Image 1 (cartoon, one colour):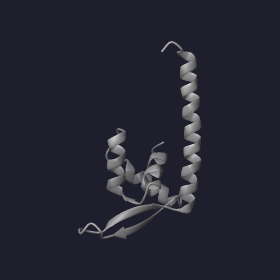
Image 2: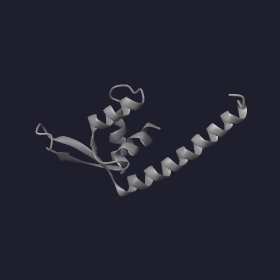
Image 3: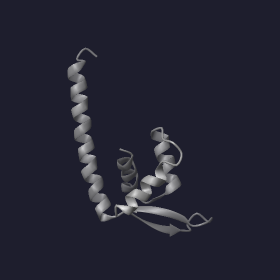
Length: 99
């Protein structure tokens, strides 16, 4: 599911690795160093591409951007997740109708 979270963040726009890590850690508890292997895997799978930018005034940062394949994969995984979450929610409501 972390892959989907990273794809979701990148769907909103290009980000550098630390920014992705910080955005995730504000929402869910993740260990330091978790994001970079995911970004590397997504790049190896052709879902993201990288480029260097010197916009920050400091050293160049490596930005990650979704490829067309990455955008399609994000939409596919998002639809699967939404269907799964709805099914689990329905099951929980059926099993605990008094709550």
